[in-house]
Structures are given as structure tokens and as C-alpha cells.
Image (cartoon, rainbow, N blue to C red):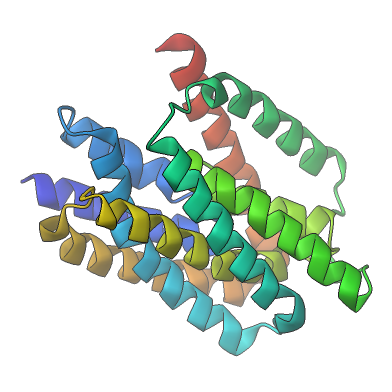
Length: 252
């Protein structure tokens, strides 16, 4: 029965994550609720074992239909991989509890900025020269990659927002680029979790299959409806993240 519950959560997580990130908002809490006695690191590792497949499929779908700025995204992907590995290593040594109270406040600021700037992310107009774009994208990859390995909630949304705000992408191109970096950070964190025995491999296959199905559906809708649709889902997901992380930080 447990695998059915978490597989359905994985399908929904793949759907949301393919559009704008935030799949961990759905699958990880479902794993914690279904297996309350399990070690957090094991549930985080199991979550990553599913997420990489859905994210990988979404990355492939986007790359076929959206013009990716590979000269900036490939170095950023490498930086994200390194950052996530360092973050995942650090979380095995110290707790990330201090981020619980800070995260909802950061997300509120991000949401307010997006709502106020009504034209934000509607037009794809990269604003940096080639070398500057590489450095900026790599800095985003390293910092948010570290955050993903160390804590994780909202990683995809942070990637999308920063690509829109800093690099000048629209929401569709930002989401496509975020998928590529999120794939690297998930793989990096999974390597470390697996090396330390923090993955339930018997759950990995059904969770991965469900995540891929959800991801195919989500990416199809995003590509069909464009940047405005992705922006709308982004606002909804960030709002849900604020509620979830605020509850965890201040009310639980």
C-alpha cells in the first residue's frame, strides 16, 4: 500500500517539477508522512533516486523545443554538480535547521517581487555578454546547487527566478535551463546519498516510473502554453512553498 501512495505523489511531483520545479514539495513530505520512523537522509536519497529520472526526461523534452544557451549552461551545470555534492556532504555533518525559519521569508520576497514586476519573465531577452553570462550562470549553479544538496525545498523555483531576474530569460527558457542544472544537482546529491547507504532502491523503480509519466505531462503543457503559463504555475508553486515551509518553521 505504501508504494502506491508514494508513487502517486511521485507522479504529481514529476508533473509540477517539469513545469517550474518544486516537485520535492510533494514527494518528500509524502515520504516523510508514509515512513515517519525512517532516517531523513534515507528519505531524501530515495526522493533523489526518483527525481533524477523525471528531471532528465523533462530536460530532454525542453532541449528539443527550446533554444538552450549551452555556452553558459554547461559550465553552470558543472558548478551546480559541485555545489550539490558539497551541500549533501555538509548535511551529513551538521543540521540544516537554521534554514527552516529563513526559507519562507526569502520565498515571500521572491513571490512579492514576481507579482509586482508583472512583465518579469514574459520576454526572452538575455542581457549579459557571453563571458559575463557564463560567470553569472555558474555562480547561480554553484550557490543554488549547494543549497539543493544541503536543504533542497524550492531549488527549481530559485533557479527559474534567478535565470529570469539575473540573466533576462523568459519563464519558459528559465524553466528549461533550470531542468538541466537541477538534473546535475540531483545526480550529485544522489551519488553521495547512495555511497552512504541512504537510498531505498526497492522503491526507486516505481517512484521513477511515476515521476517520468508526470514529467512528460508537465513538460508537454509548459511547451504548449509558453512563458505565461509557466509564470502562473511558478506563482502557485512558490505560494505553496511559502505555506509549507512556513508551517514547518513556525507552527509545527
